[in-house]
Length: 357
Ligand code: 13P
Ligand code: SF4
Image 1 (cartoon, rainbow, N blue to C red):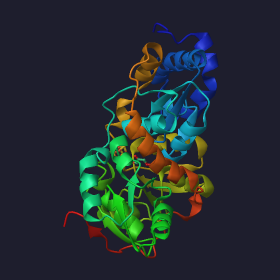
Image 2 (cartoon, helix red, strand yellow; image 1 turned 135 degrees about the vertical axis):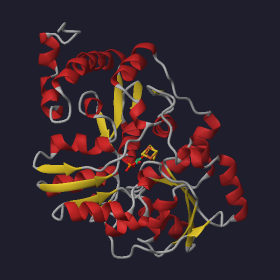
Image 3 (tube, protein in one colour; image 1 turned 90 degrees about the horizontal axis):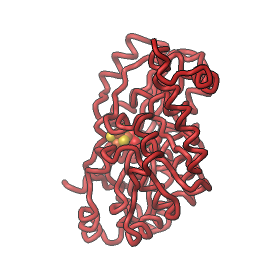
Image 4 (cartoon, rainbow, N blue to C red; image 1 turned 60 degrees about the vertical axis):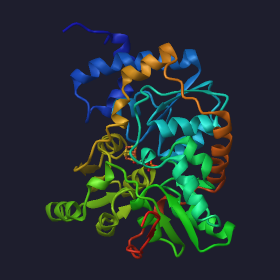
């Protein structure tokens, strides 16, 4: 077989990465990935660029070219803190917009502009303005999985890592007992179960996580009685009620790392388990998992092309960005909550009121 760019020098340069991914990537695939990884890492140095890679990226991206990897809260913090001239967002569009909002002087690139999110497209800025008219005294919290235009209309943002903390903070600051939390109905129900603050919710859902149901948990429990079952809080509340732990992608990674051994079921996007294998070799990951079609639009070829051509630059109208920054910055300024607690099970089942009912 022709080397196709997989030269001895490339093989040497990428051997440490190969050690991390070889459980999930075949040697034939590696011959295609390794030259691209070497090329991208050289381009990053030339362009003074960093790659912010979400936990749902495929292993060759996550381990091969990601400079900062993590959940959406961690990546937003990194965008604000890093001193590179160029940020390549290996994630979806709302994450790239968040980076641009936090780092307006940096060039933010995304390899594929079609990398959307079913939550971000479930609500518009006009929807939020109508909600504000209807509930003028209540704080509005938006999940970061929203467009910059939506963020510009709200009071503060949250991620799944800090949603309970942000909702409680907003209730305290506004001196109210009710908070509007947009746009994920399931996240809102799961947050409501962790707090006495009353939640008004929107009707959005993550197309990946809403496909899990409580029967999936029971089936996996019956098949693997010793396995620990972890779920993302975008899953329906009855999934979390039967899972052993729930938290953001970073909180799940942290939980697996602390566990160290045994069997784990991750009810989340497929690449998450692939990426964790390298850091938790003693853990056996049992799937089911679902693919996020938006995250999967990001490829090594796309990352290489955007570094070569400068496409696709993500821009946000400066007026929108300024107002969105206030909401994101208020979140960033809160201390990161401890990862360990997760969405504990005891109080799950609390009701939320639906804004559209
Ligand atoms: P995290 O903030 O947990 O990384 O989640 C982002 C996301 O899009 C999950 O579907
Ligand atoms: Fe959006 Fe769900 Fe994909 Fe995350 S997994 S980017 S919430 S569609």
